[in-house]
Image 1: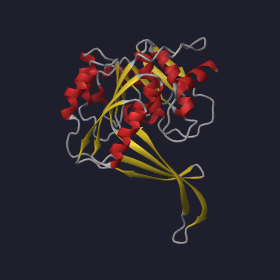
Image 2: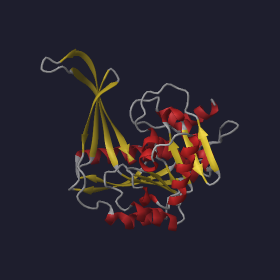
Image 3: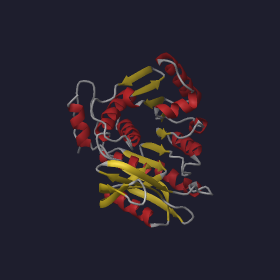
Length: 321
């Protein structure tokens, strides 16, 4: 069982009994690694000789993988296409110890993001996806309700791919079941997130909704007004090099960004919301959960591509603080 360890300000709770349910848009991240030694004679582009290929879970699947890496008992509910990419995602979830309910929809193509890298630098990203022309998760609300009774905290991971058309109903059901629900939002219509426990927009996503702020006081006023309007317990804004700020009824808490080399920020938001959920579900308060999420984010941005922060890595980062 994970043991408690921390510094003067942070203690990592025991996470092994915590049950997290992740619902949202999943995708498969593919990486083609190669060497670049010449320019194509056909066009002024580099020729990449592929030497290695990797597949990793993306979107809500990466959120689930991060929850599991932190020791939580993790379930994932989503929809994939009846295709090879969907099968790969299911296999990756099983390998990560996640209980995955990935419903196959023959009218849907599993979202795949293919990244081509030469000498560890991303040269190209190719996206394979189609927007659903129907409500892909409506029939799954009954299963969602059943899973709610078996979980401690819910994450709704919205990537705008159509899997969370009924997110307002999912939030209402989670709150009726007295389960905290964390949402990673997308787009400029935040009214549909009304009643969530915690929202985790990044800086640019928040700006889409509340407009540009001129200083910290203006940001606080706009963020708190949005939090109150939506009935949120907390609004956590990830701010890149400015760290992250938590807005609650009790006030404002800011954590500075971790001073370490940033290699790749893709998927860092997944790690943040996963850590918040696991820690809140394990008994931490919001400011402590944010501190731990900030540490976890500092671990994953030093890794290439969508990545995880394990419980051991988080314990090491906290002990070094």
